[in-house]
Length: 271
Picture (cartoon, rainbow, N blue to C red):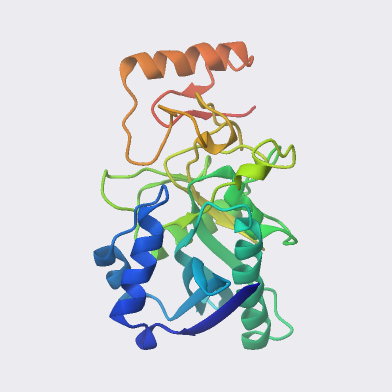
C-alpha cells in the first residue's frame, strides 16, 4: 500500500533526515545527511511516500511565484529502486499537483526541476508544453525561462539554454533522482535525454543531463539510463576522458550526426 504525506520542512526531524539519507545510500544519488539538511533550510515543503510503512521516496518542493508566474518547483527528490518506484513517483507528483491547484486556482502553473535520468521525465506525465522534448526547438521565451529556473536552483550561468543542460562543478548536486524500475527497463515509452543534470519546465521543463541517448539529442555510451551497466557516459560528477569523447564522436557519426556533437557535454545539436 502506497501512502503519501506532505508537511512543512520546519517540521522535518533529524531522525527523518537520517532515514532519507539511509534510503539514498542504497541508490545512485547517494544524497547524504549534510546535503539534505541544507535542503531543509532552502525549501518549504517535504513529501514522503511509503510502501507498507517503509520509506520509498521523498521530494523537497515549494509553491511560489517567479516574476508573477505561479510555479511548483521540485528540489532534491529521490526514489528507491523498486518495482513500484513509478507508483511512488506518481503519488508524490500527484500530491504536489493537487496542492498547486489549491494554491493557484484558475491559473496555469509552471513546473520546474532538475533531472539526471531520462526516465525522470515521467514526473511530467499529463503536462503540456514540456521543454526540452524531442523534435522541439526551444523558443526565446522558453530559453529565458530555463535561465530563470537555473538561477532559482543556484546554477546561474551554468545552463546551456539551447540544450537545457546544466554544467556541474564536481560537487554534490540536488536533483530529482528517479530511474526506471527493473521491470520497465525495456519500456519503449521512455525518451532518452543527456547526462550531467538537465532543467525542465512542465507547463515547462529545464535542467539536467542523463545517462542515455537523445532529447534534443544526447549521445550516450549506455542505454536505459545506464541501469545495470558499467562506465556509462555521460554521468553525474564524471569528466569524460579523451577516449570516451572519441567514442562519443564515433557514435554521433554512426547516428548520422557527424560534426553535431558537443563531445564534452555529449549533446547533439539538432538542425
